[in-house]
Every structure is written in C-alpha cells, then in structure tokens.
Amino acid sequence: MARERTGFIVSQVFATVAYIDVKGEQHKLTKPATARTDDSKNHLNESQKQALKLKHAERIIRDTITDLKKRGATNCKGAIESRLFARVGYTDDQGKRHDVVRAAESRTNARELIREILRDLEEHGAQAFDAERMTFADLAKHFETHYLKDAQYVDGRKIAGVRSLKPALAAVRPLKETFGKRRLKSLTYGDIRAYRARRLEAATRSGGQRSIASVNRELSKLRRMLNIAQREGWIRKNPFAAGEPLISMADERKRERILTREEERRLLDACTDPRRLHLGPIIIAAIDTGMRRGELLSLRWRDVDLEHGVILIQAFNTKTMKQRELAMTTRLKLELARLYEESTQDPAMRVFGILDNVKRSYTAARKAAGLLDVRFHDLRHTAATRLVGAHIPLSEVGRILGHTQANTTYRYVNANAETARRAAAALDAFNAEGEPAPESDVVN
Image (cartoon, rainbow, N blue to C red; front, side, top):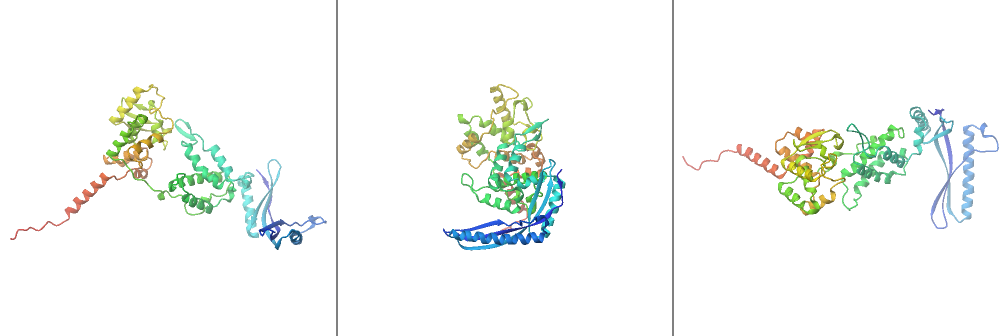
C-alpha cells in the first residue's frame, strides 16, 4: 500500500504569446513561469512565490515578443494565465517518490480533488495512479489477453473465454480505432454517445446501412470493458452510468421471416447440386429441431441415439450453457442414419463433418432457390412457428429451443400468411354471429 501524505494546492503561472509569422499563419506559445531567485526560495511564502512567478511571466512575454519581431512576426500579443492544481505526494512500497497532479477549476474544487486522490490511495493503492497514464488501448489489450480467448470448460461448464471469438474481436476493433490513444479516465458519456451516432451513420464494408444491433454489440463490449476497468480501480465510475441508457435492445429491428412449405422445398432442391450435398441434412436438422447453427456443427455421433431417435445437445455447445434433449423427426432420422453409414462411425467425429461454417454453400443454395432474404437463423424461427402452429405450448417450445426466458421464445414465433388467414377467418365467423338476420322477402 502506498504511504500517502496530505496534499496541497499549487498555483501555476503561464506566459502566453500569440503572433502571426511571416507566412501569415497564426501561432501561440505557452511557457511556465517560476519563482526562482538568487536567494533561497525555501524562505518564501506562497504570496511571495506567486509575485515572483508573475514577474517572471512578464519577462518571458517581453523577451519572447522581442525575439519574434526580429524574425518578422507581427500582431504579437502576450497574456498571463494562472491555473490551479491539486497535488498529492506519496511513497510507494519500493520507497520511490511519486506526485499525483490534477487540474482544478477553483480552490474548492482543488480541495475536493485532494480528498478524491487520498481516497483512491486508501482504496486501491498506487495502482490507482498507474491508471492516470493508462490509455484505452491498454485496457483493450488487457481485455483481449484475459477475457477474449477460446472458451475453457470444466465439467461441461464454461469457466473462462468466449464461445465465439471472432465476433467478439470484431466488436472491439472499431472501439480501439476510435478511443485507442485516449486516456482511459478522460472517456465520458458524451464520447460514447457520439461514437454510437457516428457508427450508425457509417456505412458497412459493402456500402449498406449499419444495423442498430451491430452497434449495440460494440457498445455492450465497451460497457463490459469499462466495468472491468472500474473493478480494477483504473476508473472511478463507468461513463455508461452517467446518463440515460445508450444500449436499447427494443430499438433493434426484429426480422420476421419464416419459410413456407414451398420455399423449404425449393431450398432443399437447391442442395441436390453435387457441390452442396452436405448442406441438405443440415437444413433438415435445423428446421426439424430448431437447433442453432453452432449446435448443429458441434454435434458429434456420441450425442446421437439413432435407436431411440434422440439428440443430446451438450451444455458447452449451447448459448445458454444448459444441456437438452431433442427428438428426431422421421425424415431427420433417415438422413442421420444414412450419414452414419457413410461415416467412419467414430463417436468423437462431427455428425456433419463441418469444422467452421456453411456460409458459402448456404448463400449459394438460397440464391439458387431465389430466397436471398432467408438467413440460416430463420430456419430456427421456422421451427418455432411450426411447433406453435401444431399446438405445442409456448413453454415447451422454449425448452425445445433452449430458451431460459419466455420473452425470447415470443421473438421466435412469427405469424405467417397461413396463420393470418386463419385469424381473419375466425374474426369473420365472430362478426357474422353479431349481424341481424336478413329480412324475409315474403309479404304476409
């Protein structure tokens, strides 16, 4: 722990000279004034030191203007500025002397800053002032080294790292480009709000509109990084807490796209191309189970029970870190049985044989099917909507999809055209019941 002493207020005097050079360009020079004299300055009080600093500042201005005019400068104007600083000296555990200096707006503010510095020393030690020079790039390096690494599991539970490393690193990259050289303690709520506005205005690499969801992912990473900095004592308060919420999930555009039976058929037909034969079973599995893409590609034969028609999704392969079981449809069971016969039948091997992703082949398949707006994740939406259409309770649909909150399941259940027609027919029937019977044309 650092051994601190009582702080004091320092008044610093600066001599400033503004001028125009021979090229017509404006410049400004600022130099600090001192209270040094031939006599020992230890016998001077603060008032005497201040007077000497003012005299020195006047001399600096005269000498500087004289020198500038000799070099052809014009419109030379001098000014004296006084600034207050809060200063606290302390000795670290190695016996090295340090000073913490912060600019103050007034003597009252300087006293508040001194109390704040002493409190930081008491709570966090000298480490708190290592952060005085810490930049956002330093924080980003710490975050990437200790937090953004491949996930580590113990007994099926993630204890460190992230499951999707590339997206996480991609979210941090623009933050480093924007704030990298900034002092960490100088980052404000206004800076973050301005960053959000700029990112929403900046086009994507393909020239399209950047989504709110994409910017929210970056801001979420920034918020977590600043929470870590606060926990480590590098900043006193997370700037996110200084104003209204900057991350609004409600503003994100929720896509509503599910496949009809005809669209599903076209998509699977596109997978009969020899270059995309591997994709058909994956699409069938996605539509018939609602599994996430990462869960599908991580599936191994030891997790597939063909005899009982059950798929076990391991906890460390799920987004919510919870294990769950899924039943196979008849067509999925036939597809998996075929794949198993064609495989080495090694329990540790991946079921679909894909190590990374199917982005290229899926993009080609949906293009061939004329379904460019159908994302792979929409297959999961389709599964959820069909389950609800089959009168499976929403709570059970949530368990099948691996959701921990009912609101998440609501997002996945979309009303398709068929559902809308059934709803309109039901309302027509209701309205018909309330209409008066038509009058008879028979005259009594």
